[in-house]
Image (cartoon, rainbow, N blue to C red; front, side):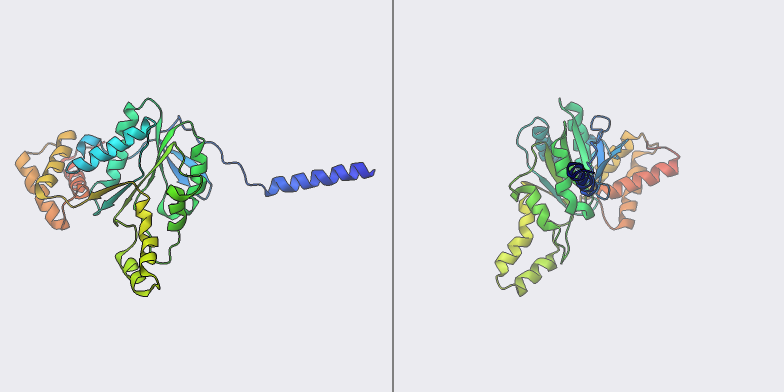
Length: 286
């Protein structure tokens, strides 16, 4: 074997070894085939959803201001105009995630360009940069959604999220906007922030590090438990939409009894009551 042949064989072995070391290319998802996807961090891929579980926007009662603001922001984004990342925070069961999904459906139906919904789970936030790199080259506009986003003490995942949302030199891709829901306004537990104040050498700087994450969201929408009138409006809207066979007075009475047994009034409690009522009446909701 000549030196030249040995040299070529060595280069071939090196090339083969480098190919084995190189990360596998992430396959492009079928963007047009589905309206929604879930990010699979382990496989670094997007799983298409045949359907998205949601209710029509018209059925979301008692959150008119939040609905109008998120709808306007999403319409601007879908039209290629500047739009903000949005944080929907507040009490459980008050319609935060339902609003995101309903707004997506409403805007996607009227938009001239494809608008997709991509969900990333809280535990996969560390892989957000890889997901954004995949979406950045997509021929669609994307609402990136994280439900129930929050961070606990000793959880460092909020730092890369801050960078990805706003602070990195690459910035957020133009075809992506990030919507998150949380029970906490600052995404951190109050005791965690208070502990930083009491133990840090420079408490103001330590607290700012923890709370500045929520500042990366230009749009803050607060959600609170609804009053009795709004709760009954939600129940009545659901009952009318699904044509439940029950007298209005009986519906109101049963709905109030249901809320008292749950100790709260919210959109989620109203929906749970409607599911129970429909089952009792032998009617289907879908």
